Image (cartoon, rainbow, N blue to C red; front, top):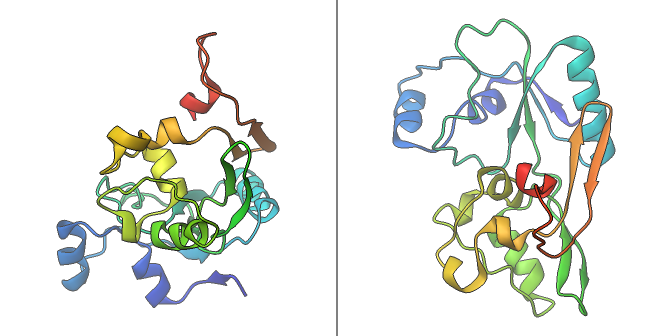
Length: 191
């Protein structure tokens, strides 16, 4: 029920919202449309999908809000393997807020406005407002080391995010929310 192969969903996930991508879409000029779109609803489902991709030699392309001016949503036109667009839109919740530390656990697929609405309802803000705010996700901001309009006040997303869970083949890397240190390379920064 959360796996779609219809043309409409595949076309929505084939490219971003750049002018070039919009023009190509309007002209029906698609380089390489995903074969399937999957909407996982939990870390376990993402893990199962990643493990299946390794086993079956699939191409996984994460999809958040879809602004993608970097063309990172598109597989190469010559790609012959099955291309799976992994839409994280069901992972869209602020799970908890620790009022004492000011830390929140938030799922990667939440769009900027939805996250702010959930945080504001509890008296909080993330304070990160990139130009793509309405069409991008927390996970996308982390993956691209996004900078927002108020970065001088709250910092870039790499400074705001304190910890994360990273799904990879064979397991989840859990990076605890630790303060900045000068003890050497940070896995959080590497991810």
